[in-house]
Every structure is written in C-alpha cells, then in structure tokens.
Image (cartoon, rainbow, N blue to C red; front, top):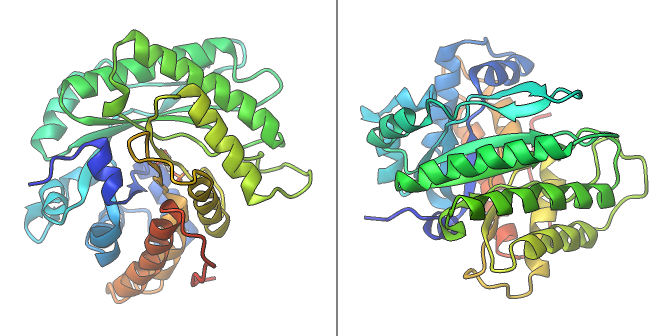
Length: 341
Ligand code: 13P
C-alpha cells in the first residue's frame, strides 16, 4: 500500500486540480453550454477521476467537498482513487472574503471548523488537503497586513493538517490580474513566500511534510511590454523558490490563467533550468486546473448528455497530462496538443 507523502505524490506525477467551487464550476459549465446542475458537475468529476491519463500520470487529484461524496463503480471516490494509485486530496478552505484594511484585500476563511472537517474527510479517504490564499498586485497591494494575515492563516492550516497526519497543499496565489512586469511579480512573490515560510517556521511546521503551490513568476495578464523568453520565467521562478527555501520544498505550480501551451512550456523551462536539481531538495511539478481541463471540458460538451464524449475528453486530458509529465521531468519537447475550438 502506498503511503502518500509530498515525495510519493509528486514522485508519481503532477496534480490535477479539479476543486472548483460549485459556483465556479457552474460558470465553466455554462461557458461551454452545459446546464449548471450538480448532476453535470459530478459527472464531469467522474470523467476526470476515471480517465486513464489520471491513473497513469497524476500523483493526486484535488476535489471540492461536494465531489468527495460521489460514488464510482459503487465505491466512494476517495477509495476508488486510492485503489487506482492516485492520492485523493480535498479543498478545505471555505473561500475568501474581502475584509482586510482600506483596500479590502482578501483573507481566506475556514479555520474555525477545520479540525472537525479534517476528521470527516480523512474518514472518507482523503490523504491531503488544499488551502488557497490570494494576493492582488496593485499600486498599494498586496499590503503588509494582507501578506502577514494570510501567511498566519496558511501556517495554522498547515499545522492542523500535518498534525492530522495528512499532506497540506499550501497555496499562496499571487494573482496574474494586472499589467505589472515580471520584476514586480518577482518582488511580490518574494515577499509573500517569505512571510509564508516565516510563519510555517513559527508554527513548527516541517517543510518536508507540505506541498507548496506557488505561482510561477510571470508578468500580469495585461502586461504590454516585450515578450519574455522562457528562460526568464524559469530563472526568476527558480530564484525566488531557492532564495526563500534554501533547503528545498516540494512545489506544484498553479496555472493562474496562463494558456495551456505557454504554461506547459514554462514548466519545461523551469525544470530544465534546474540542471539535475535533486528531488531531495524538492520537486517542481504542476498542480494545474485550467491548463489541464479547459480543452477536455470543451470536448466533453459535445456529447455530455449521453456521455458519448467521455473518451474524447479523456484523450484531450491524456495529451496534457502526458506533456506535463515530460515537462516536469525537464524534457524539452514541442507540444502537439489538440483543441476543440
Ligand atoms: P488553476 O491552475 O486553474 O489556476 O487552478 C489551480 C487551483 O487549484 C487554484 O486554486
């Protein structure tokens, strides 16, 4: 039986993030013409959980608590995934509220009820959890207060999860919204990750027991400057992680709104630049949501009612998970992904 730890999860492969809240998932379904109903949210999660690509290439899937109740082939989804060599992970934050300071920055909710929920999800087969904090880059943000308070909450969360013998995914997401350049992204990621590291140390969280889910260091979505070389992103992303975690940490990047090809090329470049970087110091894998599932969902929309498009969706997922597998092992290769328009 596999003991799922950060190293065994990321040693097997990348993580498939399929934990959109029902509201976000409804938006994604509506965007491709699928009714915003629980039946279809659950069916979509089943398509992902039963995909051969997931079983072969994914170290873990992150699911929303709603999906943790699904049965697959008569088995609870947590048990089903475990039996197919995929670590079941559950999102445990309860979303964000905009209440910090005069810029109404985000703080993530859910600490109060966390211990009871950990007990419940562990009993349902979860071996890990995820908690996401968000930071918006603007003229005056992220403020010191937002950085400090979210780091404190992330560290308390990680402590509770490690104490429950589960793997916490710690996700401080520096959002891509904005027109900032890469150096501003580097600077803000540096501040955010440093605060997270300091608070993890303060709460005596063993860094070897967590998976960090950072942003890549990339310019904002509305950045108008020159195009960047892949090497710039790789160098700056690796720089910030190595400076903040000189003794290593296992990472799995979020995609944050990047297109699938560019995100996968970035992942390749990051791993290639490590030049033999040792897994002992930490993996640099992916934990993508949109990069992995946007196109598969479009494909699924062509036959979701009678489930005639399940295989098409799973094939599109296979292309992306396989490409990410090579990328996260530093194999530079030309992407040849199919699109559904
Ligand atoms: P994206 O990869 O789509 O950014 O989502 C990953 C995730 O889990 C965000 O919390």
